Image 1 (cartoon, rainbow, N blue to C red):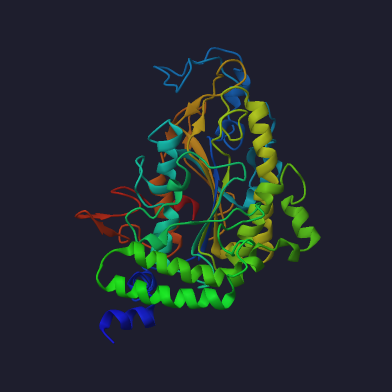
Image 2 (cartoon, helix red, strand yellow; image 1 turned 90 degrees about the vertical axis):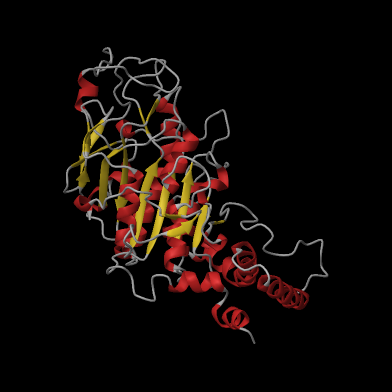
Length: 457
C-alpha cells in the first residue's frame, strides 16, 4: 500500500486530515468558550430603527425635513421626511434595553442579547453586501464564515454535515448558494443545503420510487466500485480537492440515509416544544421549523447552521427590503421570525446548550430614518444592528452607537471583519492565524482587518 492509499484508508482523505488536524494538532489557539454557531440572516435589510436602535429624535421630529448635514446618499430615492417607527418602544428586562414592539418575543430575551449598534457595510446593494456579511468580501468567490469554521474545526459528528444551510422556504437570498460556498477552501467545507419544510428535504438522498431495482445491496456494490475508481483517479490528480469532496459527499450521503430521517423528524419533539417555535401556525411554521431542526442539528454535533429569513423573488415582497411600506413588509416578516428566534434562545438555554452555542442575528445593511415615498425606507449601509446570544457573549451589553438619527455610526464603527474575528475568538481561533494559501496570498476570513469586540464578550 502506498502512502496516499494509506492516508486515504485510515484518515478519510487528505482533505479530511487537514480538517481534523489543522488546529487540533496543536490544540486551539486559546481556550474556546463556544463549540458551535447558528446564524440567523435577515435577507433584504432589516431596519435597525424599527427593531433595536431606539432614537427619541425620530419621535420628536417625525414629519420634519430630514437634514443631518451634508449630502444624504440613498440607493433609489430622494430623502423624505423624518419617519418615526410604526411600533412603540419599551425598556426590556433587567438591562432596560429599548426594543421595539415589532419583535416582542426577542424583546423577552433582552438580558441574553449583546448588541452591536455600529455595524457598517461597504455596499448599499443587496448582493455585494450579503456577500460581505457572509465572507468578508463584496465580490463572489470567497469562502463563507461557515466554510472557514468547517475547515478550521472539522466535524463533531461524522454522520451529519459540519456546515448546514436552511434557506427560506420561499426561495433564496441574493447570490443563492454563493452565500455558503467554500470558495478556494477544500470543497468539502461548503454548506449542505437542507429544505426542512419540503417533503424532500435533501435532494437525491433516497432512490426514486420509479427505480425499485436500486436496493441497499446494489447501492453498496456501486459505492464499492466507485470508491475504487475514484481512489485510482485521485492518485493522478494530486491537489484537486473536488474529487475528495465528491467522495466524501457519497460517504456522507450513505450515513445521512440513516441519520437524516431522525434529525428531521420533529414529531419526536413534545407538543409544547413545537408550539414554542410556532410550528403548525401558518405565520411561523416555516421559520419555526427551520429553527427547531437547527437546534436538533446543533445538539447532535453540527458545527455551523445558517437559517435564512427572506427570499429574493420579486413582488409581492417576501423579504426585509421594505421600500414601499415598512409597516406592512416588516410587520409580516417579523411576525414569522420573532417567535421562532426567541424560542431558539430559550430552548437552547433550557437544554444547557446556550453556554457553548453562539446565536448570531444579522442582516446585510440597515434602513434609512427618513421616508421613501410616504411609508417605506431606503437602504442604509452606514449604520445597522446585529446581536448575539450565548457562547461567551455578555447578555444585556451594547457596543457602539449610531447618531441621533440612526443614520450614520457615531461611536466605535464595526464591520463584518470585527464580528468574524469575535466569533472565531470565542471558538478558540485567532483570526489572524486562520489562513489558507491561495494564488500566492495567505487569505483569511477577516482579510487584512478585524479586531475582537471585547465590550460584548
